[in-house]
Image (cartoon, rainbow, N blue to C red; front, side):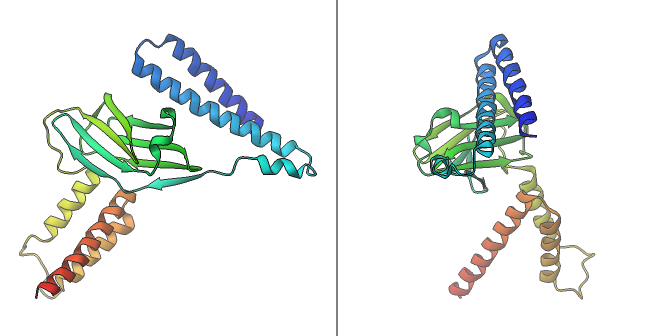
Length: 234
């Protein structure tokens, strides 16, 4: 199984290298080069793992030189801001500036971004943001590594258009929450409005994706803090 996977990876690496020779645009060359290096690393890791399995069990001292296992950590927290041309995403990671540039990269589409930070203190970090509110221009987007931070510059496909939210999910949640508080003649007067709101949020949390759950948790946390503040003001 491992040998078949290694063979498949090697074929992919060879083909990427061939495409790299044909590519003329620097951005395309960078993307192909990064992907080739990523697959090369995966191939080497598989090769080393396969070699370790075939080693005699009595060769215990060699185990002490093996690289420690790396863990992937899914990031959820980030900050963002915008200018006329860019959506700027700020991701805080201590000592990220110590990594080689090729270990910090983004995978972008018109409606999503995924940040990869490889082997930072023996951990791999991933931040995925799906369903961006507006499409982005992948070719004009880029990222920078700063002290303890990565800043991703997502180029707006429609410059000068202000984003009200980062994602479609956030906007949908905010709209649903706002509509829920609008007065309506159809409201059942016998029901507790607070109970209806909690029931709606519970349903949205149970059926929503990770981004929706993050937004609901944030709204609940802010609501609890507001209650405490209002009580203190009284």
